[in-house]
Image 1 (cartoon, rainbow, N blue to C red):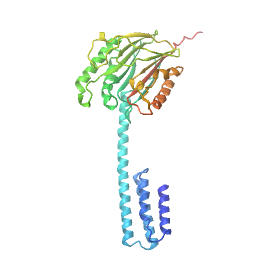
Image 2 (cartoon, helix red, strand yellow):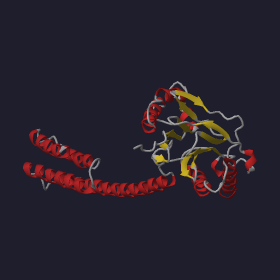
Image 3 (cartoon, helix red, strand yellow):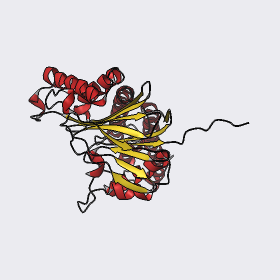
Image 4 (cartoon, rainbow, N blue to C red):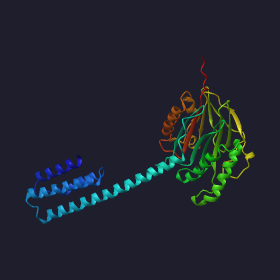
Amino acid sequence: MLPLALIVVITVVDILVPADVHLGPLLVVAPALTASFAGPRLTAFIGALAIGAQIFIGIHFGVLTTRNVMVQVFSLTVLSALIAFFCRVREHRKRELAKVRSVAEAAQKALLRPLPHRIGPLRIASLYLAAEDEAVIGGDLYTATGTDDGVRVIIGDVRGHGLSAVGESAQLLGAFRVVADQHATLPALAGALDRSVSRYLTDFVEAEDGIDEHFITALLLEIPDDGHMTRMTCCGHPPPLLLHEHHVRTLTTAHPAPPLGVAALPAAQFPVEEFAFDAGDTLILYTDGVTEARDENGVFFPLAQRVEQWAENRPEALLDRLRRDLLAHCQGHLGDDAAVIAIQRTPAARPDRH
């Protein structure tokens, strides 16, 4: 309606003002404005109306056949055609960009598949915030898979962030999904993943990206269906948080292993530790993009304090609060990819009694 109103207003005012004042050239504003929000067809239609208004002004004053008015009509026609043409080019590129973006999003979602809400006695929620604009994933990774007697979980962080780290992230996720249930212990699994990452970095990753060394920090968990003891192997990754009876405890490791890809280490170099994970407890696994997020004063995000405030929430609600609070803390601009997993052990179902 705004371009139509402009055409009417300019035409009426041009008729009312003295004859030596010419406002007809301003009619080009109507198709130019239309191109900012509409497609080429509507833009061309508004341009045709503007040309018709210019011709009407010339007929009204009886000067349509004069050289000045003919030049104005011709110029308006050429400009309207150019505006409609570039509008069509823009729409074509916009459709191409939408196709590329949809393919990229589908590929990224296929790589980092959403975790199931429940696996056995575990209730699971996940959160991923990519540092790169328009990206769904980056250098952080996580996945979980069921085994014969429980669940194995991995969360990791590729050195660097954004789309340049997606290849290394994809390689580790693929390796974990293949061998997660083929090794009896976490150290054996960590050793297999370390060899796979080292082989990939040697064969495919070059030093042309400005990073002298590549590695992936990772945290491996083995949560049995029966019992309350959970096993953990840490490969240079931030320690998880355990919510137990509304209190937060950091599960620091006494002997962490080096990150994956630093050196092909034997399984004995990846120690395993155990801790109690009872019904009602919640585990918080995260990457350093969360704890290293800074506010405008350079203060790091206090993850443990914020999580303790929401200890009564289910994993989904907890991560929703965490996402909003984290983005508000860093004004919506993360310096690194951020991933969080919340795992809650639910009470065992009691058998029916008659």
